[in-house]
Length: 118
Image (cartoon, rainbow, N blue to C red):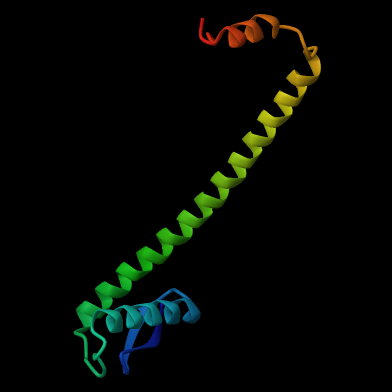
């Protein structure tokens, strides 16, 4: 762990972390944005150290879950595309292996009678 300075609402805080500086800066900027969103006139308020540490941990968990969700979403989209491709290929195979008019006589006559479900 190393000691790192982060700035939130024009106040410097020193924390111990294994995270890299850019990541912690992103979290600090995110928190500052949320603090200002909640109270637009908030400027030089000093947050108690315990509150800051808790919000940093919550924001870190949020960032990790967000990253995991994006990875899951990407994987699900890739798998869905793969399944759609497999279905498309299967349907092409079925369409090519069955003669065009075979098996449609009964279906067409039911449709003509206005009775497609019998």
